[in-house]
Amino acid sequence: MSDTSGSSARKPMIEVRGLCKSFGDQEVLRGVDLVVEEGTTCVLMGVSGSGKTVLMKHLVGLMQPDQGTVKIDGEDIVQLDEAGLDRLRRKLGILFQANALFDSLTVFDNVAFPLRERTKMSEAEIREAVSKSLAVVGLTHAAQRFPGELSGGMQKRVGFARAAILQPHILLYDDPTAGLDPLTTASVNEVIFTGKQQLGATSLVISPDVASAFKVGDTLALMHEGRVVEMGPPEEFRRSEHPAVKAFLHTWLQRQAQRPR
Ligand SMILES: Nc1ncnc2c1ncn2[C@@H]1O[C@H](COP(=O)(O)OP(=O)(O)OP(=O)(O)O)[C@@H](O)[C@H]1O
Ligand SMILES: [Mg+2]
Image (cartoon, rainbow, N blue to C red):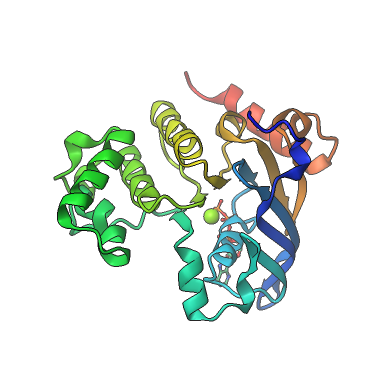
């Protein structure tokens, strides 16, 4: 890393403080604190139903908090009007849990979509940008295919190419390796790494997959009972004394041991 000034000086790009959200009498978020510093990748883990996707929806302004603040690149997004939110979303590349690709558009047109919507680029420029982007995710050959004709892992890579095409400062991934086999998982992890290396992007990866977390994360965090109960570099996280972290890692290791080979 070129930063020699001490790692504490980085700017927070995602800053969540005291975030609370309930649905009826179900308190899903009970005071979430989470900071992701510029240029780093944070992996947020947690069991199914712990509120990871709900948190992500707050980061992009799709849900409003009951309490607390959400700052993206220094801006409090709860205070923004629609125009402000729209401007902010341009800084974000978002990969939702379901890929949300357009089934009736080819891979090429899916990736080109944000360029056509958001920029005044010519068709020739769009063609060049999309070709480059598909090459990065290894899908040059699939440009004219439709999402329904692709494997799950290929769809994820198209989703990434589309999320990254406007070269966002911040990439948000919700469970990018869900349901994928180990090889495809490895290729998605590569793609996340590419986002960091080539775009210098700040990334928040939501994933229950511990192996992926240790591969791609500069910091790891665990969501438990509505809060982020631990957050730190991988080695620190591994040695955490927090009972929820120990239980989470232990359960994962046990499952790994029971997997058929
Ligand atoms: N719009 C909503 N209305 C009511 N309840 C909701 C809504 N969205 C989420 N919830 C509830 O909030 C809880 C957390 O859901 P969330 O989708 O954030 O879980 P998650 O951690 O992303 O799980 P998974 O790993 O399975 O994706 C769940 O109990 C869910 O039923
Ligand atoms: Mg989820």
